[in-house]
Image (tube, rainbow, N blue to C red; front, side, top):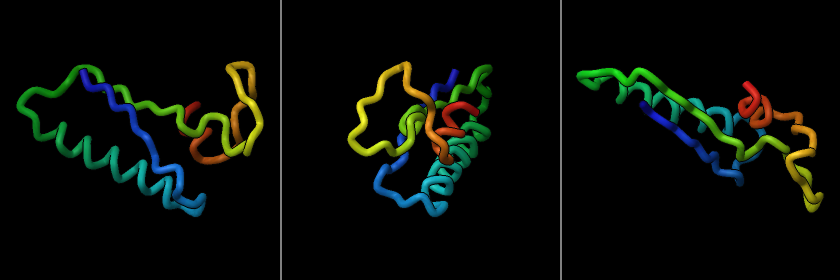
Length: 77
């Protein structure tokens, strides 16, 4: 089993750099996994770093709605 919890650099602007960072990291990990003599039966890739989006100083909790950006989509996806 592989559990991949990815944290995107939150300082990256929302101009595609976050998306590329996440995709490149996952692709790199998958490339290494494919070289293993025995492949894992389970691969879990997750992150909640951007679920709520950028809300400034708004206080958020589990009842808060999800954000409306790439990272929010990834967390739900």
